[in-house]
Image (cartoon, rainbow, N blue to C red):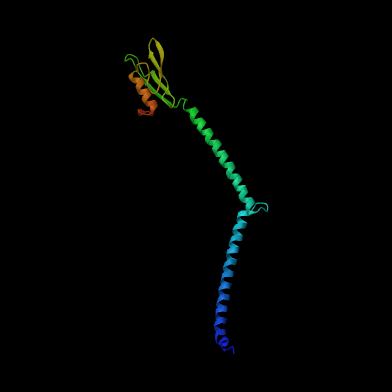
Length: 174
């Protein structure tokens, strides 16, 4: 009466065995993944005084928020310092020269002092046997309302970085 069952039973047993083997392989794989995830979880929560992953992540988020606030504050300080520094003397050009052939040495000098925008002053010291005279001229956007001498223009060029600084054989700047 159940002859068909006797014929199919070996095949059903083989299929059941294959399903059981596949389930066993799947279970071992899941066990390995669970161990890996457990190890990663332990590494993330290590040294957290028994805290959970949620607590660790919340702590990290708090740290990130604090770091962002500190970075924003530092950026504002940098921007403020940049605004303030634009008006400070940033460019300096010095030129020593001899305006009179009958005196010895380069005792006279021109000093160009300017801020970021080229605003400042030119100080010219003329040394002669009778004495030394000092003159100052305003500097606005690298230009002066007063007539500039060649030496003063050279000092402005040095301050702007346009004129190369010459060095004599003794290693001194000319």
